[in-house]
Length: 176
Image (tube, rainbow, N blue to C red; front, side, top):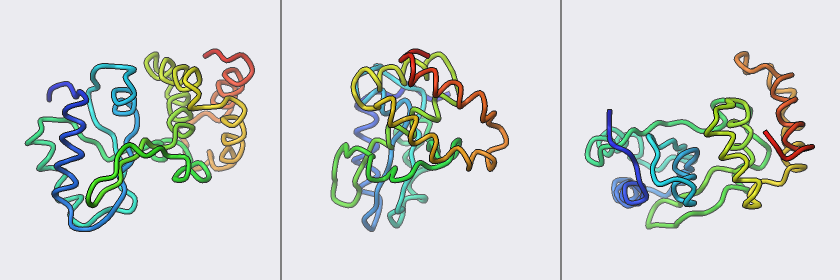
């Protein structure tokens, strides 16, 4: 088991990853990294990220950085668990622009939907924080969910009715 990941380790990853690649690209952080960078938590257990487009040398550098920084690093994003929301790239929020890589928070609506689907206690708290902080508007969440609901058939692990009920409960009551 690797050590906990704090802001300093995330910033080091950003710096070292940018130095290791050989072309421009974008990296989207999600989950615990977003929570740590926004100050909701002090640490997280892993770094979930997606490169799109991937800079040259990205995949070669990931295993090395995992070991040198002593972090759990996963190539994972909300669209691995729920359908990609329309215009997710445009809603993703810039964290920092470095020499080669632009680092973003993955679209908060997509993060919220994937957390609502998982339904863990910590995820529920994160979704409520996104709503309280104005990062997710409840009606927009329903609208985006409706746009991808027909695509849920491609995700057999998801119970579409339960997910729809959870989204509707959050939108109508503001509670999980």
